[in-house]
Image 1 (cartoon, rainbow, N blue to C red):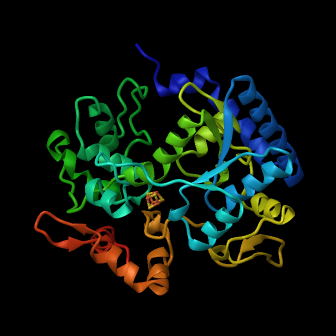
Image 2 (cartoon, rainbow, N blue to C red; image 1 turned 30 degrees about the horizontal axis):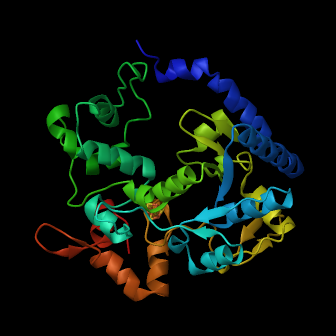
Length: 356
Ligand code: SF4
């Protein structure tokens, strides 16, 4: 029988790797910068040996800082970005540094996907990438994803997951109530089904695929500005795989993996990184903590990932303030349902109980 995920953790010595990683995360700033320098140089050398090129995947402040950090240690690489998705002030910095601007992935008809088309076709990116992916799996039942669907509803993982009873695959009760209805018949449950689709495809078509395609065409592998401390889907794999990963299907370097927000902001100050206007400026509180005076993090303005966790004025409120016309389009007009009625994020936010 094939190995389950618990056996895999044991084989790769996952627990020890995570413990080692946490020790490094607790080191001081200068250790972490030295460590990032060593790892980045190591990655570049290894790629050279393997005949691979490298590039930097650039988005907001974290990866702009990475791009300039690599330059500061003599690693001069091309930067790529699906820049038009970012705030205008970030795009300005991208232009300043000659970052190559990519377009979204191409549709079967030869034109490029835009966000409204993706939402119409596949569904809204809401809650989190992980949860949206699970809901999407529930809406597209196949024989192959049967075990996964069962695990999403019940937490029972079957053979692959080591017969766990309450695994993390299970969606939380709150969201099961709202989105678990697709599996009612199979599971004998009585959950609801929304009158809109949910999907995690938006990031894939707008960001991931264009970058992956560029990388393939240029025989190149990326440096990424990821930090495990920011949590999310990739935190655990960063902790297990460390800064540099040479896997079968993915090769990447994340020299800032052990950094936290403070380290990143300190490095941005040390390197005189031009801070895009949307973040304001980097300042120090009385207790020494660094912070950005405006946005702490950025991303696409009308994205529902994490929206349920934000305090008001949340990012949709902020867009309303900045650009009421654009806000109106996304809230009420970006999609058309089967009755020909226009709708948008307002329907989604009502359903998940987020005010606007
Ligand atoms: S961050 Fe959100 S809106 Fe932006 S590409 Fe990803 S899913 Fe789409």
